Structures are given as C-alpha cells and as structure tokens.
Length: 236
Image 1: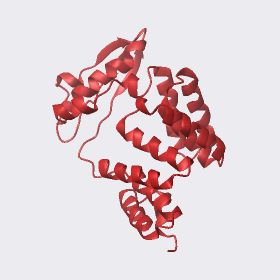
Image 2 (image 1 turned 90 degrees about the vertical axis):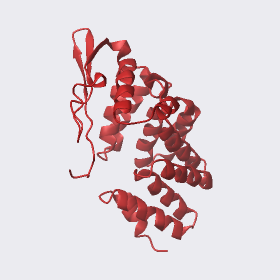
Image 3 (image 1 turned 120 degrees about the vertical axis):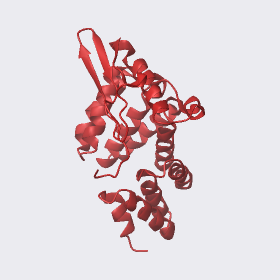
Image 4 (image 1 turned 135 degrees about the vertical axis):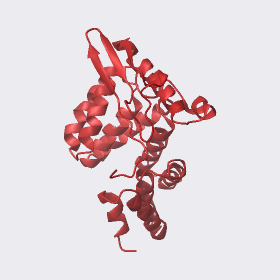
C-alpha cells in the first residue's frame, strides 16, 4: 500500500531434513494464485535448489502475464546468470542486505565468502566493488569491477547494464558509462538507480543540465534516497 504496488510477491526456501522445500508466493494482489500449478511447493535436494527455483519462477512469470516470446528471450537458468552454489547465493543475499543498511565494511565478508564458494559469481564481485567504493578504497573497487566485467556473460540483462556502466566509470570512460546508464533508464524506467548514476556522471563531465534532469527523475522514483537529492541540489 505504501508503494502503490499492484502486486506483492513472496516465497520461501526451507530445509526439511536432506531435502529443501520451495514454496512460491501464497498470494498475489489482486488475484489469488494458490491453486495454480506454478504456485505449489516443490521438494528437491540442495544441489538442485536453484534449478527448481528457476522452474517455479518461470511458471509464475507466465501466470503473471509475461508473454512466451519474452520468457523465451530473457529466461536463462539461474545457475548461469547468478551462481550454481546455494551457499554462495545466501552469502551474496546477506551481503546486499547489510550493504543497503550503509554498513559497507560489514558487507564485504559476505561477498568475499560468496566469491570463495563460486569464483565465477560476477554480481558478487560487483557488489564487493560497491562496498569498497563506499569505504573509500578506489583501488579495490576498480579491481573488483574489472573482475565482474570479465564475467559479463554470466549475469542478467539488468546486471549487465549495472556492471558495464560501473566498469567504464572505473576506467574513466564516463561517456560510455552514461550511454549504458541511459540505456538502463530506457529498459528499466521504474528503477531509480540508473538515472541516479547517469546524473552523477553527467555532472562530473560538466553536463549540469542533463545531470539535473536525470537527478530529478531519480528523486521522483525514490524520494527518500539521499544520492539523487544531493545531485539535484548541486549548483549549476
């Protein structure tokens, strides 16, 4: 209700002895999906949790109205675009939760454990770079953004634009970063992050009017976040 959302989606993965039970959302608003085939619990062993989760999610996407052509185009196994390790995914998820609380140094060990469990976990390198960035270690930030970029084929389209833009920021190619972030704005117009980072880079290149416009877009999408508000208040 607070976000004005049309639907809520939740679910759970629980250990039950040697097997795991994956339970998709119990309900969505405005329509209940409890009886749909895609929302029934599935049992699987730990090594197959991510594969089973992908199957459940694909069924749910179709039930929510995504076209078959869209699913066929964008649907890739989770182990290919995230990680094949459930333990790595759990550490990554915990790291992101800690990072969003502003506890940048505390988040690092979770991403480092995720990478130790799966050295090909591109998104973990990217978020590790953000924890270094916010802690002021630009050298380690650049190193991990480069590692994430080297694994760009192992991420979703959304993460591809995040990682690519961040990589070109770290190499000083801000014009390329801005182009990618603006592509992200077009592809994901409801997310505040792309216009926010586009704004920061535009301002750094002296494109103040463009930076202000992008910052205002970001601020409208996420009015309770500090970065776009700071960008909008910069003198031009």
